[in-house]
Image 1 (cartoon, rainbow, N blue to C red):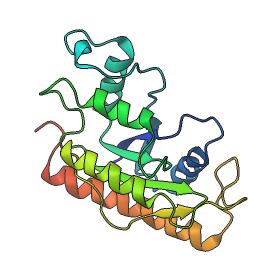
Image 2: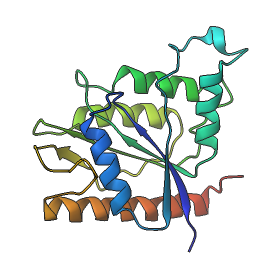
Image 3: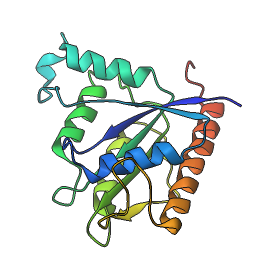
Image 4: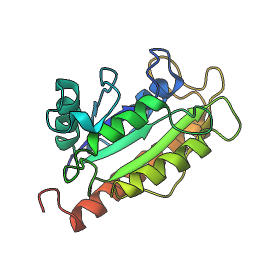
Length: 190
């Protein structure tokens, strides 16, 4: 069975982010046929077309990290009913300059956690719109809006509620299956 390389982006830059805890849990619950590497974006300057002729090192590193993976997993909080500015900035960098969009034909999935009852539903819709425009095939189901309660996920990535653990394990299996389907139709090097 093929192993797929998954790059994951955590929308929050906080070292204590609940979405970092969620990402750690997802990695532990994923099938062994998915391997993971975080794609950092903390050091990116604010994107401007002025950089298009000569990308700075953090922009080049971001595009290379995305190129090196088969699929992308976005684990993001919701800030003011949208995605965090740093994540949007990273997407802008990776999709530029025109004709070098790193997301084109790259399978993706979106998930997030928030203390609120609707999880990150609105942020995910915003992110889906951006990824759709960026030509990234998206796993649309199952949707995953995680209400994060104290103790739901330990610091080492263990999910303490069995039904949530089972749901997240199934989510990651679905992401594997979606990635396999997309890449069988849209091969990476086509």
